[in-house]
Image (cartoon, one colour):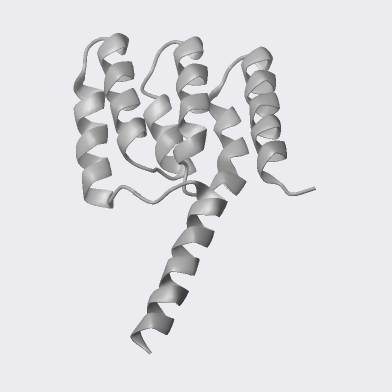
Length: 125
């Protein structure tokens, strides 16, 4: 019975990972702490660095990523980090909504194309 339950749990985790690419979602408390720390930085470079570190170690929701990217001033940095975040998002089906943080159509189109390319690699044909 234990072996059966372990197998079901393992399969469920593998399915979750296959769907989201995420096995290490951030807790609400940890996100809040990280967000407040990032927001307090005076310069975008420090904000960008801390966001990159967070994205490389934890999985976040689309809304959490969007909120983080909004603290940045430069669209090029937002786009760079949005692309980086895609592999660690817990809800990739909602990721297109990130486009709402961009001011320029070029950025919106570039992210849309990036997402479509990534999705075409994961969808079985």
